[in-house]
Amino acid sequence: MAYSCGFYAWSIPAVGPNKFREIGKTNFTRIVPMPNTHKWSIAHDHTLVSIPLKKDNHSPELGSFTDEFYNEHAQKLKEVKHVFSKLGEDAMESMMMIDAIQRLGIDHHFEEEIEAVLQKQYMKSSIHGDCDEDLYEVALRFRLLRQEGYTVPADVLNNFKNKEGKFKQNLREDIRGLMGLYEASQLSIGEDILEEAGNFSSLLLNACLQHLDHHQAAVVKNTLEHPHHKSLARWWKDLGLTEELKFARDQPLKWYMWPMAIIPDPRLSEQRIELTKPISLIYIIDDIFDVGGTLDELTLFTEAVNRWDLSAFKELPEYMKMCFKTLDDITNEISTKVHKEHKWNPVGSLRKAWASLCNAFLVEAKWFASGHVPKAEEYLKNGAVSSGVHVVLVHLFFLLGHGITKENVDLVDDFPGIISSTATILRLWDDLGSAKDENQDGHDGSYVECYLKEHRGSSVENARQIVAHMISDMWKRLNKECLSPNPISTSFTKGSLNIARMVPLMYSYDDQQCLPGLEEHMKSLLLENLPYRNAQKINE
Image 1 (spheres, one colour):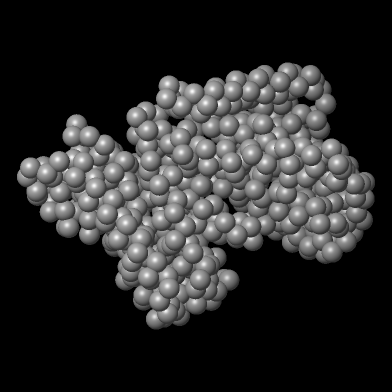
Image 2 (image 1 turned 45 degrees about the horizontal axis):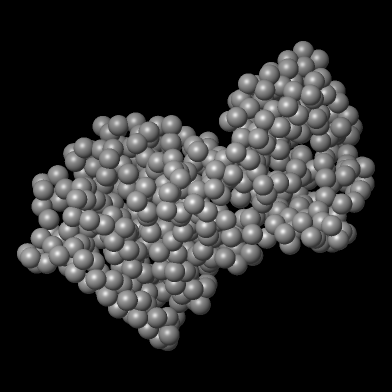
């Protein structure tokens, strides 16, 4: 699961280890295990597309690059396993190793080793209690055990309280311990002591920020803003949707590339993470309509989303119930955050956008089930909605929080030109990718297919040229929308443009249904700065 390595690396500045000096009684190189860029790879179980990446004989450089990546990835895993085996009885080193492996998202390669360590730690704490005096070790053991489902009491933290029942003030000197305590507090199931731990550690860590250098402060701030238990990688893994929906795409790296392109501002890390959640569900729900459900089930699913009624899902398959529950949770979570930060509850707008998307998916499902090929114009009007762009940009509008007024909310809700232009560009590009020849199966339908049905005698090549011309016209319309006096913020306008810019990378499939352009883009983002970083380390 190499994608989570990316999330972690983008959250934490990449700096040489010797940048971290001693703070109190801790060393920052021990606090945050920094990912090695060479370990980033497109792992075979989380490819960018639905099938494993294959070597393209027409692109030897890309093929050799991919092969080298896989070989180096495998070698690194062997090295980590060897290091793990050498840790022996050192409980602290073993737990820190587990933490690093989980943050890198490669823990599925070490399930037996991790289970053996955690079982031993659980037995130790169950039989002897947790009498260690090191706050970081106790907090780390508690977090690792609880997040893996072990029943461990939070009162192990009572050892760090004074006679008055308050956390000891001398802990303020232990930055690493406070970070561990804050991370542990995120696994609360309602215990008062964990609430106290979270408040106490947060207060002291925030207070210490002004006394740390830039790099040290960035690490502490990252912990406060993005604790591991609530990170995107952990969120996606814990959802379990890919286990329940075996037919659905599992492409978290690709999904995260969208918000990276839409809002590249480094200050908007939290918004990127939140935006990835609805994007992932667009893909999942699309697969439910394309592959997973019967027409009757899809009709009931759509009706339930329109009413936003959990009870309406009683007769539906378990995976549909699970999907809607996730959709409801994400919608409520994002609405709560927006309301807290921008004093506007967007839940009505978000639900309306999801309902429109499902309605459009259902229209396409009915067309396919009946064998009906719609008029090209009718197809495109519905296809712009089923592209999912409206859902993404409605979420973006509220997450950015700029210019939230009733007038602007009504404008965004109603699929304005700046959104419909972008959506149409995506839909037409997608159709070009899925209609490369006359032998396409047509399961998803395409504008080319509808055009050929409507214009007998026209060639595929001619239809594709018309689509390319339409994309050009849509770009002109989008440019005009961005230049016109616009009540919506510049950040939102740029986000719409960036979706359109990203589309060619996301939908230019090769003959093996891979995305070499996207892989090259990722390579440039994640790897091509290596010489610079290595030079930095030499000079430090």
